[in-house]
Image (cartoon, rainbow, N blue to C red; front, side, top):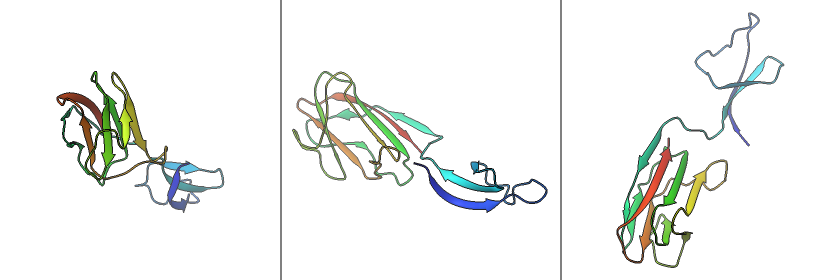
Length: 131
């Protein structure tokens, strides 16, 4: 469910009273709302190599609106958010495509660092982060 972050009125001349606001949602009554739907405009892609000890996969980011992490290896990878990753704990990404998605829409968006670990090390994690 989108979050309304500002409301206003359309003037008698049909013009939006605050034209700088472009993401408008009208209800037909002349009232508009600016909606924060959690969408992002700038995707950033990275491929961190996960080690056999806790590895920073995604840095903390207060501007994060979305993240997708995909295990691109032949071995299980474990994630922990905001703390060191530990084998067999936290969020498990199965081998060959296991994934974890973070978003406001899913209700699990976090801005903290995401750490990863695997058994043998040198395994690739595909990351897309949206701001």
